[in-house]
Image 1 (cartoon, rainbow, N blue to C red):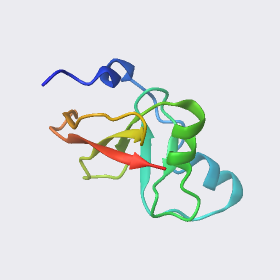
Image 2 (cartoon, helix red, strand yellow; image 1 turned 90 degrees about the vertical axis):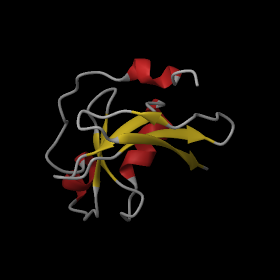
Image 3 (cartoon, one colour; image 1 turned 45 degrees about the vertical axis):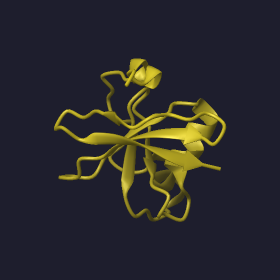
Length: 103
Protein backbone atom coordinates (compact mmCIF):
# COMPACT_ATOMS: atom_id res chain seq x y z
CA UNK A 1 0.00 0.00 0.00
CA UNK A 2 1.33 3.45 -0.91
CA UNK A 3 1.91 5.92 1.89
CA UNK A 4 -0.78 8.58 2.38
CA UNK A 5 0.26 11.81 0.65
CA UNK A 6 -1.25 13.81 3.53
CA UNK A 7 1.51 12.64 5.88
CA UNK A 8 3.76 15.27 4.26
CA UNK A 9 1.62 17.92 5.96
CA UNK A 10 2.59 16.79 9.47
CA UNK A 11 4.74 19.36 11.28
CA UNK A 12 6.32 19.60 14.70
CA UNK A 13 3.63 21.89 16.12
CA UNK A 14 3.07 23.87 19.30
CA UNK A 15 -0.53 23.65 20.58
CA UNK A 16 -2.37 26.96 20.13
CA UNK A 17 -4.10 26.70 23.54
CA UNK A 18 -4.58 24.44 26.58
CA UNK A 19 -8.21 23.86 25.53
CA UNK A 20 -10.39 24.44 22.50
CA UNK A 21 -9.20 27.79 21.19
CA UNK A 22 -12.67 29.02 20.14
CA UNK A 23 -14.55 27.56 23.14
CA UNK A 24 -12.16 29.28 25.55
CA UNK A 25 -12.97 32.61 23.87
CA UNK A 26 -16.75 32.10 24.08
CA UNK A 27 -16.96 30.24 27.39
CA UNK A 28 -18.33 27.07 25.76
CA UNK A 29 -17.75 23.53 26.97
CA UNK A 30 -16.16 20.67 25.03
CA UNK A 31 -16.00 16.87 25.34
CA UNK A 32 -12.56 16.01 23.89
CA UNK A 33 -9.80 17.99 22.20
CA UNK A 34 -8.06 17.50 18.85
CA UNK A 35 -4.69 18.94 17.77
CA UNK A 36 -4.06 19.87 14.13
CA UNK A 37 -0.72 18.33 13.17
CA UNK A 38 -0.15 20.91 10.44
CA UNK A 39 -0.53 24.18 12.37
CA UNK A 40 -1.13 23.33 16.06
CA UNK A 41 -4.75 24.52 16.27
CA UNK A 42 -6.55 22.96 19.25
CA UNK A 43 -10.26 22.40 18.64
CA UNK A 44 -13.08 20.41 20.17
CA UNK A 45 -14.19 17.03 18.79
CA UNK A 46 -17.40 16.17 16.94
CA UNK A 47 -19.02 14.98 20.18
CA UNK A 48 -18.72 18.57 21.44
CA UNK A 49 -21.52 21.05 20.68
CA UNK A 50 -19.37 23.33 18.50
CA UNK A 51 -17.18 20.80 16.60
CA UNK A 52 -14.34 23.31 16.17
CA UNK A 53 -11.74 20.74 15.01
CA UNK A 54 -13.94 19.84 12.02
CA UNK A 55 -14.65 23.52 11.32
CA UNK A 56 -10.89 24.16 11.32
CA UNK A 57 -10.38 21.30 8.84
CA UNK A 58 -13.06 22.62 6.50
CA UNK A 59 -11.61 26.15 6.61
CA UNK A 60 -7.88 25.28 6.47
CA UNK A 61 -7.92 21.94 4.64
CA UNK A 62 -5.44 20.59 7.23
CA UNK A 63 -6.50 16.91 7.26
CA UNK A 64 -4.44 15.30 10.03
CA UNK A 65 -5.41 15.66 13.68
CA UNK A 66 -4.36 13.91 16.85
CA UNK A 67 -6.10 13.58 20.18
CA UNK A 68 -5.05 16.28 22.64
CA UNK A 69 -6.32 14.25 25.59
CA UNK A 70 -3.85 12.87 28.17
CA UNK A 71 -3.30 9.15 27.69
CA UNK A 72 -5.36 8.93 24.49
CA UNK A 73 -3.36 7.75 21.48
CA UNK A 74 -5.44 8.57 18.44
CA UNK A 75 -4.63 10.23 15.13
CA UNK A 76 -7.10 10.75 12.29
CA UNK A 77 -6.84 11.64 8.64
CA UNK A 78 -9.95 13.70 7.96
CA UNK A 79 -11.36 13.65 4.46
CA UNK A 80 -14.21 14.83 2.36
CA UNK A 81 -16.37 12.20 0.68
CA UNK A 82 -14.94 13.09 -2.73
CA UNK A 83 -11.32 12.58 -1.59
CA UNK A 84 -10.68 9.04 -0.32
CA UNK A 85 -7.74 8.51 2.02
CA UNK A 86 -6.44 5.13 3.21
CA UNK A 87 -5.79 4.36 6.87
CA UNK A 88 -2.15 4.89 7.74
CA UNK A 89 -0.02 4.16 10.79
CA UNK A 90 1.09 7.28 12.65
CA UNK A 91 1.79 8.55 16.11
CA UNK A 92 4.62 9.32 18.45
CA UNK A 93 3.32 6.53 20.68
CA UNK A 94 2.31 4.07 17.98
CA UNK A 95 -1.19 5.43 17.45
CA UNK A 96 -2.89 4.47 14.22
CA UNK A 97 -4.37 7.13 11.99
CA UNK A 98 -7.77 6.26 10.56
CA UNK A 99 -9.72 7.75 7.71
CA UNK A 100 -12.96 9.41 8.62
CA UNK A 101 -15.69 10.80 6.37
CA UNK A 102 -16.85 14.36 6.81
CA UNK A 103 -19.87 15.68 5.00
